[in-house]
Image: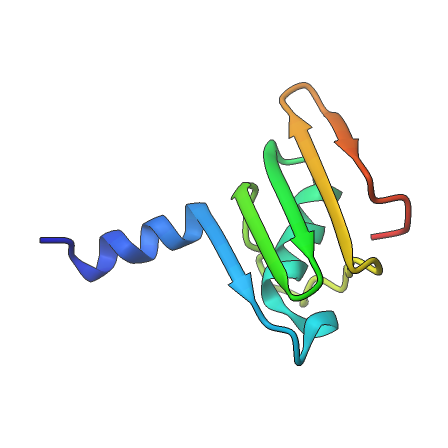
Length: 93
């Protein structure tokens, strides 16, 4: 049987979120913006209120909360090792 800690670890690695009501303030979208900003390798997809992230990292809010946001409703990004990024997003993070 799966333990709760294993499910928590899996949810950190493969983050899937759906939150239409507060899209702009969504923590999953903030994690995608943070990961893209730091060029952390991973696959990032966001489509209206749905987001999917493989790789990347959750922002560390110490000593301050990461302020980055994604200002588009849809997009996809692929960040490869060696700081190579391919994305449809053209705005500021």
